[in-house]
Structure formats: structure tokens, C-alpha cells
Length: 217
Image (cartoon, rainbow, N blue to C red; front, side, top):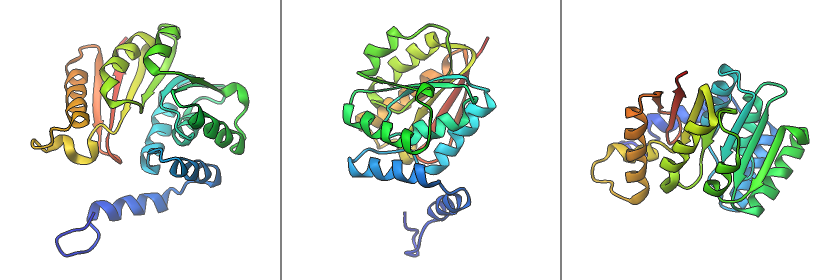
């Protein structure tokens, strides 16, 4: 992003400073490179750090990830889970999960800590156990986010957390003129989460936005 004077905007400078302040290690950098090679949009480092922090704060032991990609968010989440925590990651693309397995192996993640399932999220989610998870992270088809939310409310334990990547659409949700399908879907998701009485929500302005909500007991 460029400001009116032709230089980097304050937002861009802050994002760069954060990335330098909390740099990704070699396994995360390798996973990010794999994602770039196949055109997968991985979460940015600042969002990854927030995911790790939220998972650790929640004391999460069991988590679900929708959208494995090449394993960038997978690694961030695993680093926030309890030492014996298990992450179930779902992606429709077998190639993405192959790359994610390579990322997990390079990071030295024990095979029992990550369960990778190939398939469409809406077909896999009904097969998971109800009220058995501490965290659900959604970074898959934006058009299906409301369905993911409904599934998360079933899968989460009381006190569990649901998270949605790209919630601000890079700022587009705040622009009334932005009416593309993805932006409209994110606005509707934000409204439903805000009005759901069982959830305590927060919109976190990190990266392209992270919508977080905790399920009340």
C-alpha cells in the first residue's frame, strides 16, 4: 500500500515491523514457500502469531482447521496447542495436504499430533464428534462460512473458540461500494456472529482480519 506522498503507508510499515519483530523460523518459511509455489494464500505471520496465542490462552487440546493449504496455519496452531494437543485439518486438495505433510515433517511434528483429512469441509464436519473440540479455525471457502459456523457451534465445547480468517477482506467490508460475493459473505458472517447470543465475539484487525468468538457455557 502506498500513501498520498508516494511512500509506503503506515499500515504497510507496521506489518513489516511486526514480521521482523517476530520472524518465522525455517520450517514456517519453508511451508510458506511451498504455499507460494502452488498459489495457496497462506495466513500472514502476524495472524499466525495471534492464532498461536489464542490457542495457548484457551489451553486448547483439540482443534479443527478448515483449509490445510501447505501447512502454514497448521504449524502456527500446533505451536499454540497443549503439548499433547491434536489438530484435525481438512482440505479438499490432496496436493495441498501432501505439501502440508512435508511441512509438518520438516518441523519435526510427531505424526499423532496432526490428523489430515482430504475432503470437502461440509462433508467431513458431520463425521467429527460433537462437543469435542476447543478451537475451530476456518480458512476455506468464504461462501460456506455460515455453514462452518453452524458446524462449529456443534463441535465446540463450552468455552471453545471459533475463528475466521480474512474477516475484513483487506478492508473491503468497510467499503459500502464493495459488493463482490466474498465481501458480502464476510459482512453477513460478521452480522450473524455478532447477533448470536451464545457467542462472545471480537473482530481483530490483524492481516486481512480475524473474526474470533468464544462459545458461552
